[in-house]
Length: 254
View 1 (spheres, one colour):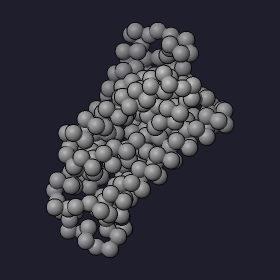
View 2 (cartoon, rainbow, N blue to C red):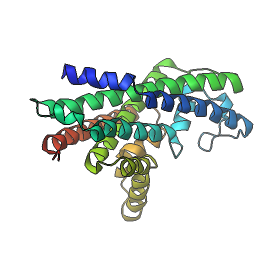
View 3 (cartoon, rainbow, N blue to C red):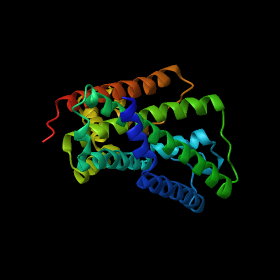
View 4 (cartoon, helix red, strand yellow):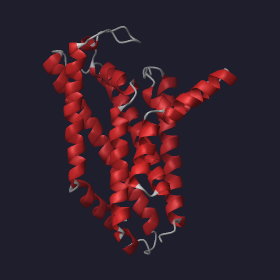
């Protein structure tokens, strides 16, 4: 496990594509704030001016918009990182070792967690820079609430990366896998499920779908919303991690 983790860490931190993605994301995040300043209007849900929002409110507004660029970048990197090893074929040299298949998947999941964490750090940094430059407002807001928000969204986005990893493992082709990741990020499935549910019942089960939870604004001062976010994140993370491991254990390497 340690050797596989070291190998993936080396591939991760020497991966030039990762740094390009993070840099491009940061530039577009700052540019997006500049454009929001040029065409500022009250937020549709809170009726609050974007320039008056603290960082917690700003993050929730950004992540609730479709498409979520954070999800798009995570989907692209997840597929690229997995397929770069899969297409090279050298992973077949170690998968015959005891527990190597299981450990290789766990290692990939940990790398995706690191990338997701980097995405959030870059997003927060870009937000603070952009809001300071164009809104003259870099307020964080209540730090406890901010911490809960970032932790919850980090877990949700990490779970999303594992869902995309499962799709890439099943499809085994980069372009269709990226398209699948983008479709998931656009919440096509969640939107259809919500529409169908509204036609046939008064339940709200579709709100517990992963991307539906990511794009919905929650009041994390409410215990029910904290449980909702944490529960969905942990269930999807554990479920799809288990599915990924089980699939890799049975995967035909031909």
